[in-house]
Length: 287
Image (tube, rainbow, N blue to C red; front, top):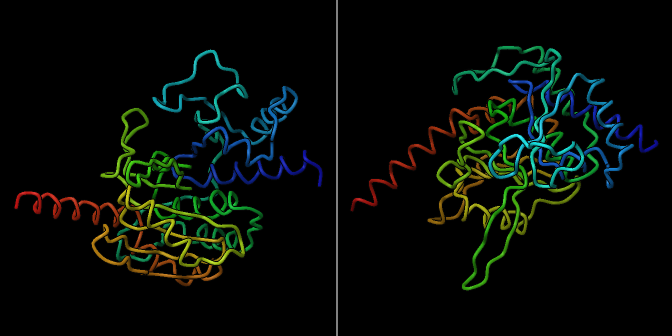
């Protein structure tokens, strides 16, 4: 397969993932966007190819500043900073509609579309860790009710060990985020941390330890680990006790275990748990 065919295939998958979101919109860091398309160099010819593919799939784009989320003025597409945001919006109708049903109710709205989504997930060809994040984990959370403003890819984690500081990045953190302007990427708003490994990588104690160490600085309710085949969910215990593995399933089992997964980590439920934790901590601080 040529580079052009690979890029066209990656763009088709990206466009489909955009149409699968509730608001037909996705936001990616520039470095992530270009890596997904397999573009190591942003030559003028390659930029034009990408613009042509975006137009073919009826996807518009907007460049936004990495810190303020304000629109980038006077910056041509392809010249943005690697950490700036590319906001992609599909102008086509979405083939999959995602609803946020009650936590204790089996999701039924758009059941036929959900069945198609399960089938597509089971047939995914995941070639890299990035594929696991963007083709599997992200769409899964979208089906669980999370929306584009909630996603923070490659989220920075400043870790401290004594006087030393280390800058790390979590693959994906889901925040309770209201808008793009105000900075709500703070621990008090962190809902779920997700770490991905490439297909075939065993999720062992080292992988669990990495996610737990990030969680100590971000304080999510859960962290989710996946190698594209296994999906493991852990309840983060805020460093007060050992974290609890609450669910594990295979990608091929998603349809059978969807109700359990939905009740556990859908957006509505996790926000409720986060709020209860906040109230408990507030009460303890009064003692």
